[in-house]
Length: 327
Image 1 (cartoon, rainbow, N blue to C red):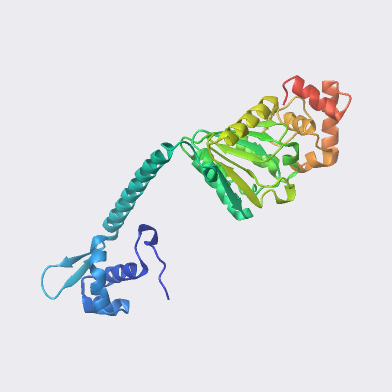
Image 2: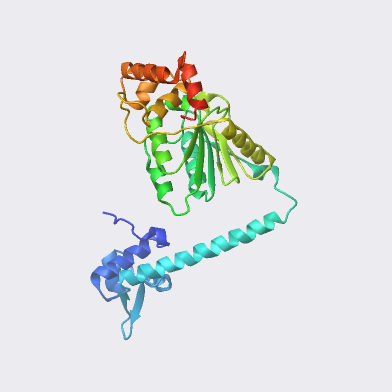
């Protein structure tokens, strides 16, 4: 049965790892002994020796016949990791040099400004890559459907735990909260530091560090996550940033409570959630689904809130809440 590969990520091939692990089990061994242990030939082991020694996995024992000994795993792994880190550092330096050469040209070429991503999984991976690489600020226009599974909040937790995590500003479309679990997802994001507002969202959009944006390639909502357009520094990207800032100024702050709704008392923090969803134009049934309540409980709560605000209609209640900075 094939052994599980442990050193693949450090540049060690299957044959090299097999020989190294066999030598660890056997102890110092000759070429013939190691060949028998691995099911290979002595000639094959001999051809592999320079590479194994270069990787720091084995060394030779003085004397005749030739005998080999495995480097202790803790030492061998440290050597391999140090080598890989050095290679990564060189690659990053090369990337910086190449970027400088590109910057010396008159400007970006059209094919370098736009990148097309096709397939729901590919779109989700590209969005997560953009989010994970952000260092300063993420700007997000939130509108269904979603390529990323919002029920899995591991990305939120990883972003919050990352040192130097970017500030996130999100504008949520009223339709965003029609999706089951979206309110709970947003509540956790706000608890982790996201600045959330409720407002007009003409298109799904995410912008990382004002340098890279991703948005749907087509306007058809049913196909919005099947393909995406990635925009790199350009006038188009500047326009998308400007669009977000305009919508941000017009949006209403969304203050979400961390506890469940208790319909008996007034005022209390969760009331802001009901008012925000009212202002978004959501019906009682949709609000009930998001807050995990019965429609009758929500209806009673809306009635109490409307009476407290002196509102004539549901929409009027949301309008007055915004006027009094209750959202």
